[in-house]
Image (cartoon, helix red, strand yellow):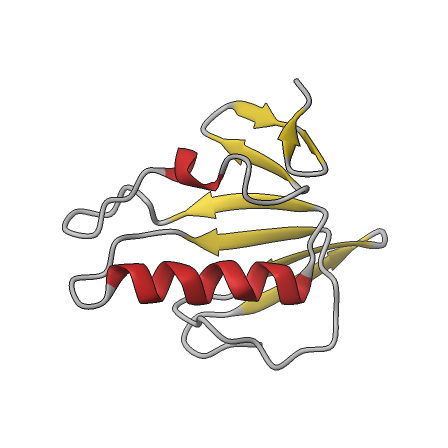
Length: 105
């Protein structure tokens, strides 16, 4: 997977990919769930987020679970992900469903 603290869990045919601090993944897989490190980096935050968004497109997971968005000093709003992808996004305790980039429910 990526670099520090990345791992892949596979259980009963369902995969969850946690890429840790990576923003590039050299894997040929499409995870069911992608734990997406969404944060505002101190240097080049827009470049970082754009790189992360490209990675999502590359991996094309079924579901996106934003993580690390509430870490002190790098806080980010996970709602920024809404509408950027067709994948469903879980933010806190709410699923946001999309069809062709439009919110379906």
